[in-house]
Image (cartoon, rainbow, N blue to C red):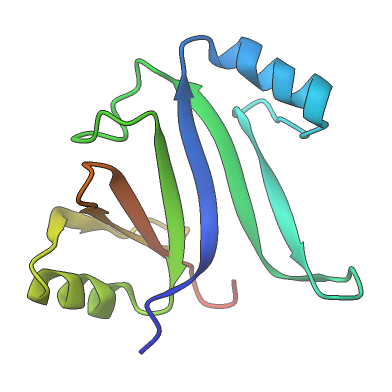
Length: 128
């Protein structure tokens, strides 16, 4: 069984999110949206859009969304079968955080890596 199939998103915290978002927009040309990030659409070798995207987002350092991690970043990895991957991680003795989340835009679960970083696992909804 495949575990990780790609990167769904990169999220990080900043002391001044608006200023950092503006820096990335001005100097690196990232199309930062009102919600604080950008979505990069995947393309094939010919440059044609394919199913999937990668989110890039800067949030406030005051946000506790990465807890219990104290890291300033979190990577979201795409998986095909979240429940199976989480069970494998539990069986291997990993620190899987409970409960997993199942909102309208896919299923999410989390595990802590050995350095104390929160890792997000995402099973996209069918067709994505």
